[in-house]
Length: 189
Ligand code: S3P
Image (cartoon, rainbow, N blue to C red; front, side):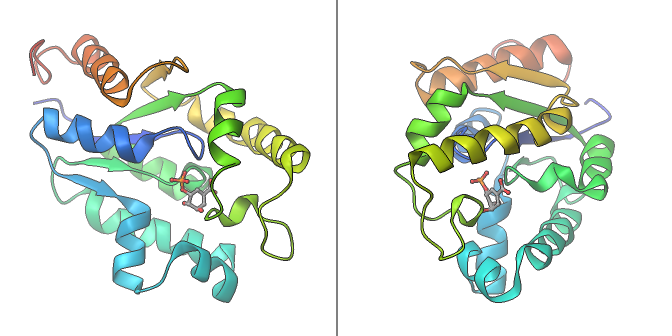
């Protein structure tokens, strides 16, 4: 087994981390943890409500706290929220314990996915409504610019093609994992 046993997926909101992570975990016979769902389940609150009632800073603390609990537990596949790696402690933890995989999705594809989704507080205006298309495009662009240096620290970057189905992305990750650590991830794993 590779020294780093965990697998962590990162990428912008809407990049498919949760859906792909679940398939990848299944394929590797590992358990899957979606960090946002874990927080919601244990805090008994939606991410939107955590942001609305306690603010982003509180949510960021929870991300770190819950990741600390699960990342050392066993060799699972973890999907982070798109902003988690901006915290240096989160980055340190991930780099120490896991192989970090970045799902890089074209900006236009992200925009098309995210404009249909009302549940992400980072993409809301001050009234709590989803930004209009221009606002959304600008916000996505500026957040990506800020976050890209963190995403770029990944051990593996998968450039997701807009037409790929989820399982094709998972296949590509499995191929990349094999190249990265052939003993830990045999070809037909
Ligand atoms: C966030 C991304 C969300 C969630 C929260 C904040 C971000 O997760 O953690 O709304 O800052 O990019 P997804 O990337 O799964 O949407």
